[in-house]
Length: 228
Image (tube, rainbow, N blue to C red; front, top):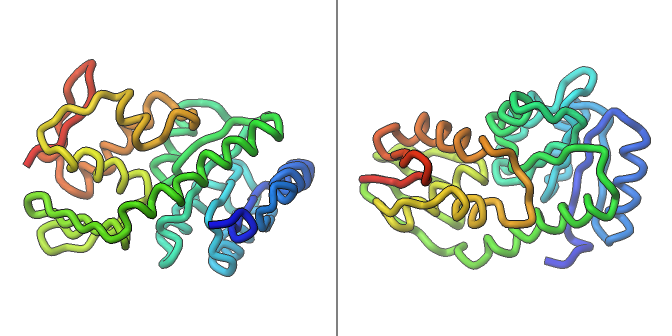
């Protein structure tokens, strides 16, 4: 996919942020759309169907957490890449963001060139996803459809956010193998994307709730494994 075909939605209530970030991303050739609050952001996301959404957390009318949850539950937007761009760096804020279905978390202030680099790293996932598009994997009672980002568990269809899907795909690729935390971070989030230390734990908890607690085992001090 060429840069000019990639759509990015920036949602922030600070005019300066909208202007500076949209200018730098537009200069790279991306199609950039903006919204000044969560309500407007959700509406524009449904209309434009962007590949990447950059969300502020604290906004009027509807905050970024609520907006993210709505977007994740909107048909056609389940696999849109979502990252938070916010001044709030507390762990609870990051956990809330990942719980809502976010893929990443970027703390501001951030230099425009660094942000552009982060965006490029996030968008590389679009290309990486292409390699497995026709693959359907069956593990026990679970069917993983990589083309549609869909899970069928005991006959029940489950739509997972992108990172939960990629984490499940990794763990089920080798059942009973213990994947070290650093390997999971590298394979699912990539070396160039900085995420909080609790990110993996949050996503594992969400998978346990949706797939079943018995399938995911914690190996203390090492990582996680998927068991049948």
